[in-house]
Structure formats: structure tokens, C-alpha cells
Amino acid sequence: MASSLICSETQSRVSSVLNRDVKQYGKKHMFDCNEETCWNSDQGECQWVSLEFPQPVKVSELKLLFQGGFSAKTCRLHGCPKDGALREISHFYPEDDNSLQISFCLAVQHFYRKALMEILFSK
Image 1 (spheres, rainbow, N blue to C red):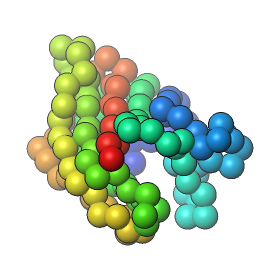
Image 2 (tube, helix red, strand yellow):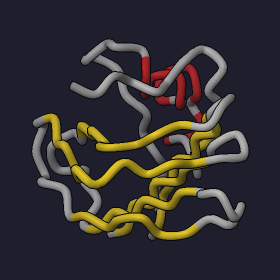
Image 3 (cartoon, rainbow, N blue to C red):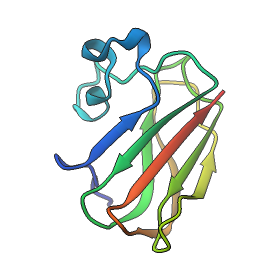
């Protein structure tokens, strides 16, 4: 069973926050373990989340939970492997409901250089 790579030193960035209301919709809600809160992006064609880990990480799966009716149509996962350049690792098509989704299970991916991952959400 996989364990979460998110820790207190993980730095996150997001493309936007709904109405710039970070108190109610900000990125801090992505990892607060509260099903009543979530990050909400503003409108736009492509939204993204970027995670920078304090140490190299090994990724084997990605779990996402979208609010029903607000799911992206296509998602892409980018990672920064040993060579230091972001590259696409996987693309996936999430369900548009409130269920926890394991978006991919793949051979373990190693990320180096204070591991950087981006998740891109497209309509």
C-alpha cells in the first residue's frame, strides 16, 4: 500500500484560486484531510497544481478527488526525473463524480532534484 509523499515541507503552487479567496478556496485545503473543504481554481482553460518535495521521491500512483460537475476532462502528470527537465509521465481521464480516483498505477517513477511534479487539468 502506498503512503502519502506530502509532508509539512512539501511546497505547493496552484494556477489560480476562485475569486482570489484563499481563505475559503486556497491550496491549503488540498491536503487538510477535511472532506468539507477543497482547492477551487478560478475559471480558465488549463489549471494546474505544482508540488515540490524536499527530497527525491518515488511515485507509484496518484489519487485525486474532484467535486462532481467540476472535473477536468483530461489530466497530465509531469515530473522532473534525474536529467532535471519536466516531462510527461502520464495522462488520464478522470470521472466527473465525488469518488476517490486512483488515476494511474505504474512502475515506480524516481524523481530527483528536490522532486518537482505538476498536474495539469484541461477542459
